[in-house]
Image 1 (cartoon, rainbow, N blue to C red):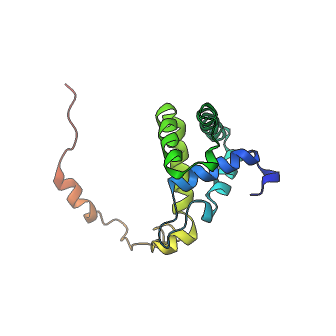
Image 2 (cartoon, rainbow, N blue to C red; image 1 turned 30 degrees about the vertical axis):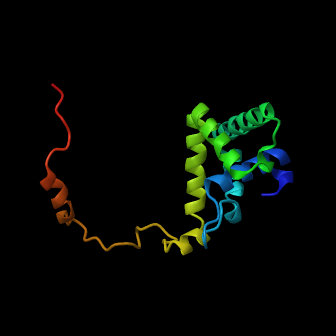
Length: 154
């Protein structure tokens, strides 16, 4: 997604890209989050889900505030400093950060390039996955053999 059609301004995009690289950096053959356009996925999600957009905005605003108090620019500081700021944001905005993390991993690990590198399937396991015989409940025998796994409320 290019900047002209983005909800985010150029500085926010740069900060989000830096954040994503810290979350999923390039390691060996595995691409970074930015190399497989996780940011495009997240921006599309921001258009579709206003609540997700709010999570991103509060995270970027918190990063900006922390950096402003230190007279630094997030996308220009060393990775270790970025990670320190990200940890602060995670502590201060746990719900928003958890949602960002979930959607970042969702975008990354459903990307066809990443799936090929981890030998993942590019399709759901069903209906073309395991052959299941209709009406054969023997697969549940091990589960039934465990017995009850809850406590009765007295």
